[in-house]
Image (cartoon, rainbow, N blue to C red; front, top):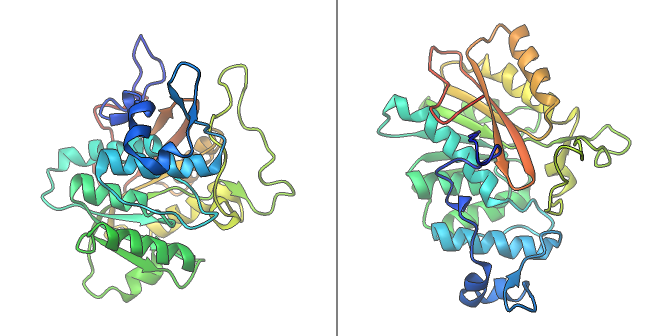
Length: 305
């Protein structure tokens, strides 16, 4: 997170979307996006962020405009917002910068149908990405997105046969014993055991208004037993079994209250090389935690926590 006097909650300074897109010009340029836009009396184009179809075309258009990525999403799957994903990628860039790596290898835990993190990492930075996914339809779309953008040389989409494990299946079958510099994850936020998993309100409306965007994604992408806290705890447990295979473990968190729970769990596991940050984009805030079992510095220069 970057804070300054003018804007307490700002995007990462290198996020290309710090300057809002000109939707009017983009609607003229992209026909599919134009068809889901609304025309105001002033002649300007507006975007209805609460419409799922509009969000899909918006994300596809922004990926094409800014990164020349041609991406499609499985029906009913999670539609990634570009500003948030870029904030995460840029945070990783900041942590990796002091290492002066010639080649970077990362793991995308649960890449979804878009495979957006791996696509951005490969296209923007030339990173070698391992994209893990368990849902068959998402795997098919992710592999097609990689193929369509000619990134097969940098991205491997691995079909996880066992949902109960995160790294185990791949590491047991991978014979080269590759070492990875980071993993990233956008975990299922909600607890599938809750009687109303999507009904809870975790925000303080007096401090921050509700998000503009409609929620998208299948139940499998949005929920898991125990929600995001339990999922990230599983990553922490498996990280202790793979201390030499991954240098920096990270995960996003969708609820602020989850952060101290994860920090407490890391402390219980006697993991002390830890850092946190926040991602701000519009009315939406997300949190992230990173830890390492090695003496790697985890405090990037742009972090102000």
